[in-house]
Length: 249
Image 1 (cartoon, rainbow, N blue to C red):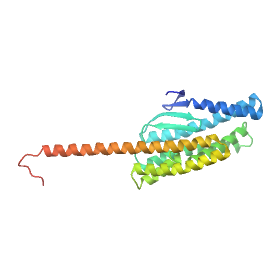
Image 2: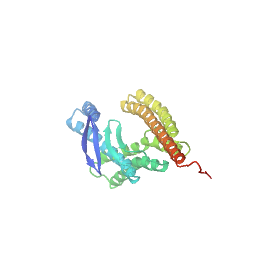
Image 3: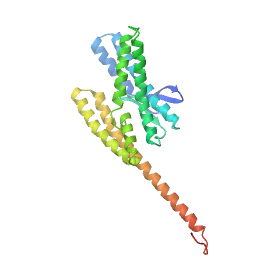
Image 4: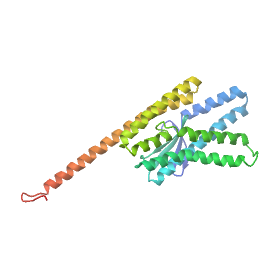
């Protein structure tokens, strides 16, 4: 993969960090230095981000391994400054499958949060401050990803629910437009609070949702053409098999 560093291969899936991820690490390191003025503070801030993104990787593995149960492979998992992306080889073929794949990621974060809570319940174990931050971060990740902003997890659940009533292409466009409405809210909040990460997520939701909707529409159009060609070919073969004295009953 161009412009990305391969971090390793786990459970048969390559994990990459996009080059922009280095910008995030540098930005966090700079902010930590400004706040603490110490190397320990910088290492603590960067370590916190790396711990958070380890949880993001596990979140993406939740999607990937659940998709594998339905016969869908994962090309790679990529870390970006705004989160992670599991690139599946195909989309689920049924609404129920899409719901399970989408919910698997937040479920991993809830499981991590429960495990950390159990660790903290022991009293004041080593690294309690870091663990508390990871607990809160995983709960935020779980809830935030369930916002119905397609193509985020909650948006995919919304698309699957609409898909039970409408064709997949129309369901995707409906979910994408809901996602764009949410993206406007994200952008307004990000600009009002000076939070560039939320603003970047808003841009991602707006453009990625529309791009996937167009891709699904094109895929369905081509599938319809293939079906029409197959039907025409079958009719032609049937007509060619008739002789002048044949009767169709």
